[in-house]
Image (cartoon, rainbow, N blue to C red; front, side):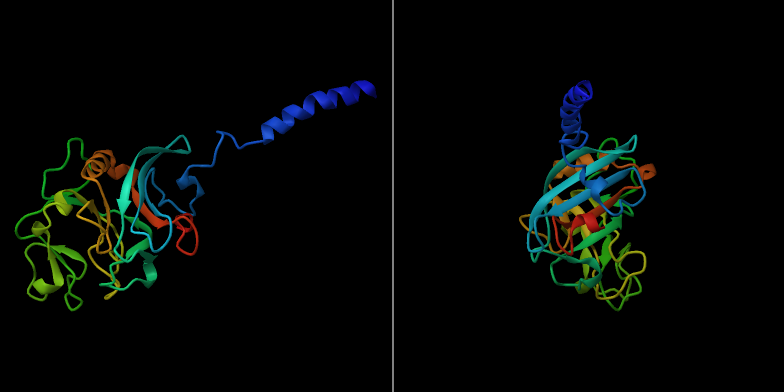
Length: 235
């Protein structure tokens, strides 16, 4: 009996030590805690502390051997009026839509960074993004601007020389546009402050992301907050 008790005393501390912390010594990577990552092997996360925040962190991740590994990170900026659930967003509110979205293509006034493999469109004088609710081209890139898309209700991309030096289209309200929900939501280079609803990051971060993104990796972007109804882990 005494030998069995002694053996238990010797084994139990080891068992307690093994159970003291999860493997790896910390919380699981953010993508591993999300409900959905889009099904690919690449993911961008853009997270804010709370819905009213105008800044946070953007990170990009690769799935290697079943484990998400962070490839890079940078400060991020959001809409001037914070973040809101994507399905409830309204156009013109200066809010960034939360959710999980595809990234249809990239574009920019500058040439694609070295190593870019993602579809990349050069911005020309004739390049517009239509935001006119009455237009058949609502929430679409157009060259040239169609007659039913008013210039006053659209973005002439070439005029945003800093922000659109490099950018990625965020697939919010893109596949089947709901008029009035919002148009022209991008991941782009920082301007002077908060955005009108896009996600922005420093110019170097955009160059790094474009060189990192691979069409075969099917990258998505998840936008959300640390907790609550718009928590990034819900998407």
